[in-house]
Image (cartoon, rainbow, N blue to C red; front, side):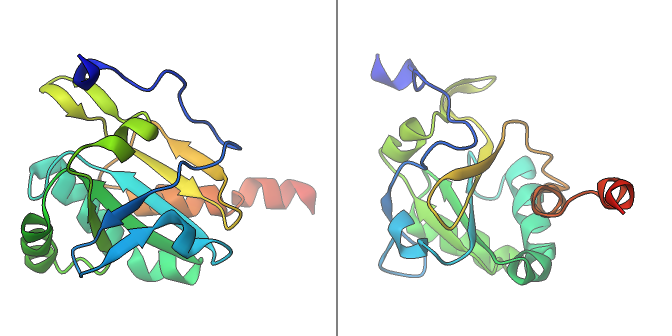
Length: 167
């Protein structure tokens, strides 16, 4: 029964990001607290390693990685897949960021991304941009898997039109 439930309150910008500690593909554990005061953190939830949409999203973030790092953004991907699967996926596509395993989907549930999908019960693709203060800056409800890095950068930079009007 609990597997079919979604989080009762969707997370929104301004809310504190739920804390977590998960095993990473590169060894050891990674916690939200590790990034406090260190720039922005993109926490992206994806359904499964090495599937078409998840690969496009990961490759978008890989291709935009230099720009994200320049903007002070660290990237963490979270799925229920295990460390071996994450390592194979990251190796195959040269992913430069950490992938975390949430096998019991408790972190998925805390972020409201575990529930009914068109394929059954599982990960609902969403991303969360967390500020240095640990609060959510932006929630990407509908992720464009081919433009995700660009969309993250757009949230951090005011559009040129707004700058022109202010001048």
